[in-house]
Amino acid sequence: MTVAATPLAAADYEVAGTATAVIDGESFDLWVPYDAENDESYAKKIVVGPTSTVSIEAFSGEPGESWEDPGVALSISGPQARSTITSLSVTLPDDPPQTLWEFGTGDTSRVIESAEVQRDDDHVAFSITATLTQVDYMGEPVSDGGAGPATMQVSIEGEADLTE
Image 1 (spheres, helix red, strand yellow):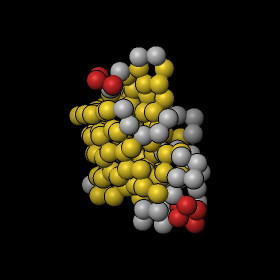
Image 2: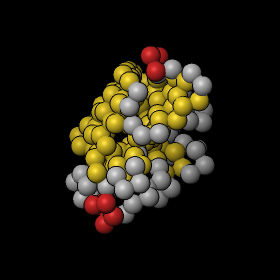
Image 3: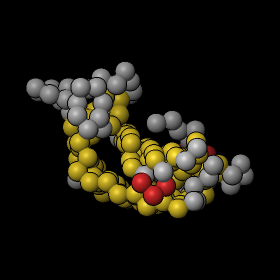
Image 4: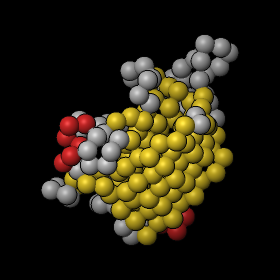
């Protein structure tokens, strides 16, 4: 997940949306940054023909004041009425550098327990419950020190206003 702002620059951003994430049993309130000066949001819609992709990045911290991990990035694709979550990644503050948590990577199977998306032209609401695998910068699963890759359970729900 690319973070363009530092915690000090977070004050330059307004709130485009919010999310609540339960990550490995711990609850976090997240916010989606919006740069009013440049009309640029971390909740974007890209339209290509009859389908579109929505990309959302949300971070913990005090909205408009601090910008920290855990962070969540997700993509939602498809026609507006049949959109589905196509990718999800999470960064945690205590993880080693160049690692993140995502679903459906490498040889691991995509494990989504539930997902729901509601979209209109400029707004999206979403919820997802999934099992994520920790991967390195090459997308290879990171071992948990035992027989298999490190995994964790997440549940995320939120909403955001979209920019193009």
